[in-house]
Length: 304
Image (cartoon, rainbow, N blue to C red; front, side):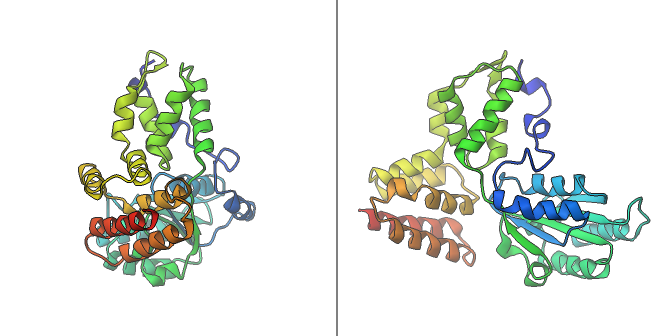
């Protein structure tokens, strides 16, 4: 089987209930209450890309009796379009008493669009709930944040992601080596979607066939950690970041935090403080690459 000639695994194996949803055990009991009551408050699900925010939102609406409207704000962030779609949906007569709007990647909405959204949330609050997802919660205006129950979606462990991918391979009757599976997981983690899509692209004739050297080379995150740990020159790290056209620095700050024990030479606390300062400053700066490189300089001085 050539994975490219079949439906996307990332959709075929998207969890449909809390039992198959991996990670975020701290949220499952709270979400279970919503499902049992057949009602939800306005929710704001935030965290790094590919870690299950949209999946959790869909689990909620698919397991309660409601009509649902899905909007991806990264594709449609025009204030008039979003307002019209939501208003028409919320004001129409539905088959069920509750309506839910999933607004995916809400941090792409302009401030004007968010202000309009806030008004819609107030106008239709009696029978319409909103579930917002975003990577950068700081880009959501305060009046919306205050109207939502916020939940941070944290990535499942590498072990959990590896087990999920192993189960997919076995279900699809794919022959694979555990070392190759580990390479794919490490290359894409914490983005589960990226891990699964990468795996499917590299399945040919029911076998996982990967070029180990190319996978390692393409995984700049692994390279970054290795370069920090072995005392590489700053210019080499700077070139690595530039060559990979990094756009999601929040993911890299999280990576530095998750792996701090491996590169910090025992100076964990000092490194975490540097990471926290960099992540805080990232919100307010124009050039996020400069801010991140400044954080790396501080870390390199700490562990030297």
